[in-house]
Amino acid sequence: MPKRSSTKKAKRDFAQLAFDIVAQATGQKPKAKPADVSEALDNEELRKQVMREMGSRGGKKGGKARANSLTANQRSEIAKRAAAKRWDNS
Image (cartoon, rainbow, N blue to C red; front, side):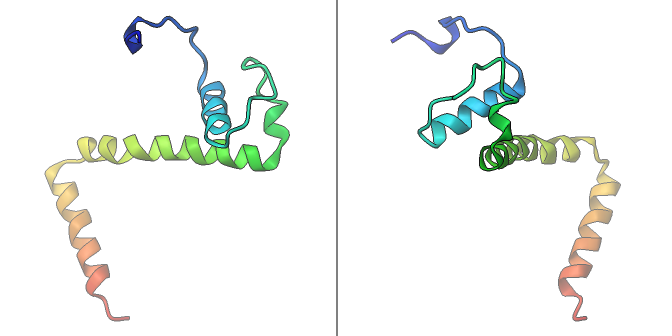
């Protein structure tokens, strides 16, 4: 079995990749060519699945990026507000 780094694949945009991932996850073969995802996205359920996958990917890296950009004082203030909300009885 060849290593993943040795396989050469054409670069695809994010929408095409998300479409293929959803098609594989649901056991369906893509109905449209990878270059023509717009027709497949007319299907509401498929569009929801693709958007869910895209949101998930952004969420996985968004928290780390935000944490890296905050200063120690900003993190402390956010933590204080969160603790106050947790212990608020109203």
